[in-house]
Length: 337
Picture: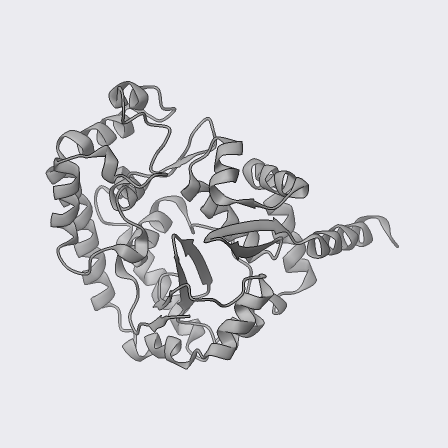
């Protein structure tokens, strides 16, 4: 495995998650992790200050309001701008704004990521596709404006990112906290991947610290590439004991939240029949692949699925033992004396 460890956040992902939290709340439900380092409480206070200051920035709603469409797709303008042509780990470190303006100005559907907003028909009448979306009229106009006047809309997003950057610099946090990634070794990774059923292979992995997600571990699967974000408030042992560090009650509460989500429940019922890869699940549910990845991250977080790589595809399957355990625990809590 080609492992690249960074000592600063994946900034566009960091700022995107900050904007999302300001408008919609934290991106995903998260379980409490016991492996918190000595700076955790201070980081929590700094995180709250960060969000409080960031919420005062204008136009956050335009770019970060998240809409759930009729077919359970998730639509967010910032996501569309950032992800139409790139995976998060592919974002150029320099001149990202100019690169995106160039891509949108000379819009070529052949360069779009295959799974980009497939509910919009870019091959035919995409204006009509946008008009039919179940979002408010202002959001529709913002999408159309991005396609017709990308310079204005993309500049607006990066102006917000610039202000996010200034807020980060104004908060008195110790940059050395981002060195948490440097203590991650191959044995830690082997144990983390082994727990979710993924074998270590030649797939590159990039490991970043994260401040806005100071209390989380976030694992993302991209085409031929893995990305792992490690919260700055976690101890090194969080990676190896992440899945065992939560109480039965916490796991049950998370399990019930997952079951209450229509899309996640449907994914579990599909995986009951057979293992499936992302595009296969997306097709079966009429969703785009990034939306499936969003749900799979949550299911992985709760230990409800396993993953394996076969012929350069990531296959998902049920973790029947964990689901059975949660059902038995619920039975015990509700029905047994």
